[in-house]
Image 1 (spheres, rainbow, N blue to C red):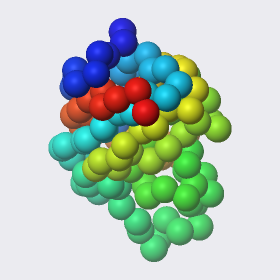
Image 2: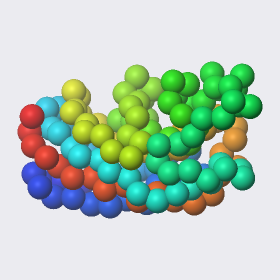
Image 3: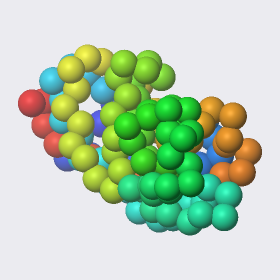
Image 4: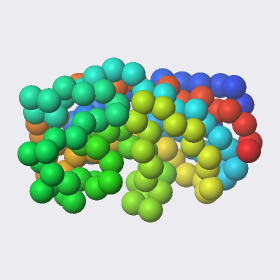
Length: 130
């Protein structure tokens, strides 16, 4: 699905899913406002889309899918490609450099999704052609 300028949808992003398919196809040059609401859990820790840091987990930071972003922060990707990953957190503006399908996920270690719970609501609004 492709959004027209000014059009928006809301997608539920599960903390437990390795990839959440937004069903939105973007084109190079387009701009999108991405805003997330809600809370989800990483084991006993509850957080919002900005995720959290934990001194006890510092030695494991390199194991996160996006090591420089917080634990369980909301991350976006085009076509599930590592090189296209970006932090959404609570809000960001995506300026598309290339076409692709928008995906989202909780930033966790790949083998630790089993203890995640909850969903965030991700609002995607097409702003302009850039």
